[in-house]
Amino acid sequence: ASQQSAETCIRMARETGVPIYVVIPPFGNMSRFGSALENITSITGGLVVYGPKSEQLPAIFQTIRAEILGQYLMSFVAASDAKPGTWRRLTVEVPRGGKVRTVSGYYAR
Image 1 (cartoon, rainbow, N blue to C red):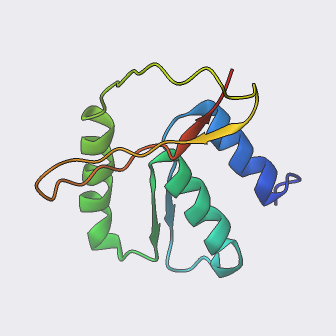
Image 2: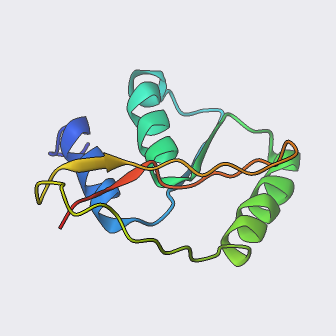
C-alpha cells in the first residue's frame, strides 16, 4: 500500500546501503510485487523468501541473523571521473567458488 513507486523504493534502498530482507508469508499474495522486491533485495545484498512453512522460519531467521552478524566493511578509492549523482556498478568476486551477496553499486559523490 505504498504511495511510492518501485523505482523510488529501489533508489531509496540504493541510497541507504543497508541489506533488505523480505519474508512473505504463504498466505500473502505478493506475486505482483515479486520482481520489485527481488530487485530491492538484490541491489542491497539482502534476500527475499517466498511462502515459507512455519517450521522453516527459525532456519530462515537464523540465516538472516548470521548474515547480519557476518557483515564486513570494504573500502576503496574510485576513479574521480564520475559525475556526482550517477550510479556506479560495484562487483565483489571471491576466489575458489566463494559467494558474496552485497550492494550492487553506489552513487558517485
